[in-house]
Length: 138
Image 1 (spheres, rainbow, N blue to C red):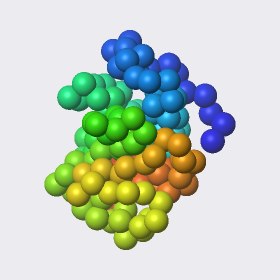
Image 2: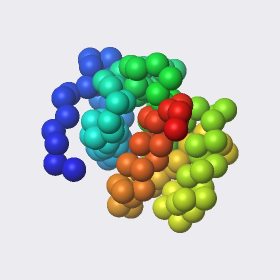
Image 3: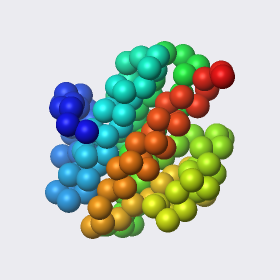
């Protein structure tokens, strides 16, 4: 992915600035992957970037398309970050079956990754695409 994404809105930039440098860099990389992936999905439409529970959150603006994705560091960890999905979906269960060795999982709500290890870009992009198209019929 070589696209350049726009800087985050001020309130999200402020959240990133409050993080340790390595964590901030990883979450900004995940943010770029999310936005680039969304841009490559037909009919998803623009992505809304906002804060939910003081965490950067991303969701399709178009209704009944997909579900929200949030990103943050894992509380009580300096090296783990998480990509959170709506816990009442079957997404994380599906990801567990598709990518059992690419991520650690937190129940039915999150993919957990160690920031010291390479980002599993292809797998994460696929998970993002599945979340942003979760409510599509067909």
